[in-house]
Length: 386
Image (cartoon, rainbow, N blue to C red; front, top):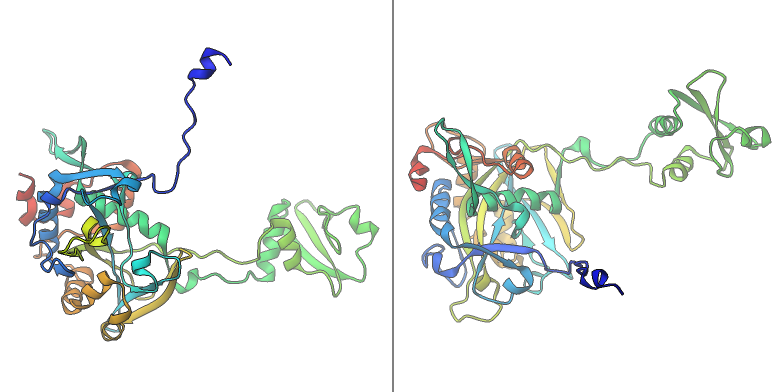
């Protein structure tokens, strides 16, 4: 082995839980942020959430997930997003269930919170303004507020699909299958016919080698015919063989015209300090996600099951079977409903609030930029940056 070969670094092989996770050093988290440290949620205005996170921001740090989960040195930030919609003036919450194989403390629990950890890909810088008042990023100083909001959009894209009735999967029609097959072979027009036997005259001209099926070009350019053996061949079978896929449309995700409105914090920290207790190492930022009335959803992770949309009264009946953080929010459902109705589904011009639009956050993630402060933060919180 040459000296050069001996000095070559070994390729890094990423292992489970190698990602960086971010949160606050405990001493930067106010003791009264949530209230009952044994398990509670506290609701705030979106301006207050922003202001509190700005105050805690100096203690915003990151650590490898495999390490941070084993120490109480950092309170990992989780964005916990209940999705809401208003139908005939009734407010509904999206509910799913963590199935067998999920985290032990949350197994089989019902949940109204989507989201997860803040990771390195979610980091968004703070910003200032230049002499012309244009936003300028502050190098190497990530914002805990914007990074946490940004993480929610990524987690949603990974965990859940929102869709309209038109976006549901369905079987392709015969005409649609034929059009796909025709496009595959450069045919603008294609028909089909059944024959008693797909004989040699079709097999030699066929563009596919599939028993009892043939695709042939007609005399006119861009025109063709699918030949099928009667009682055996089918357009659907041909489609499967050509594309190695079922003849179905894919689930089409809806473009959410929604706002993400931060409205509180959750903690279930145990005052006795049980090792590894989830609340000793995590703190959740609550943000309501608005979706339109005709939107449905499906959780995408195998360990989760989609339950559906539930009213406030139905959630109260499910309280005992919910995971802890959802239980704490159920105890504040009247406050959540007021926030949803006043901030998610209406936007009074006189009310200052931090309303983070999904499209803006997606743009942040793509460009690594920060939306100008005046677009996201009301006058009341401008002083938080001074």
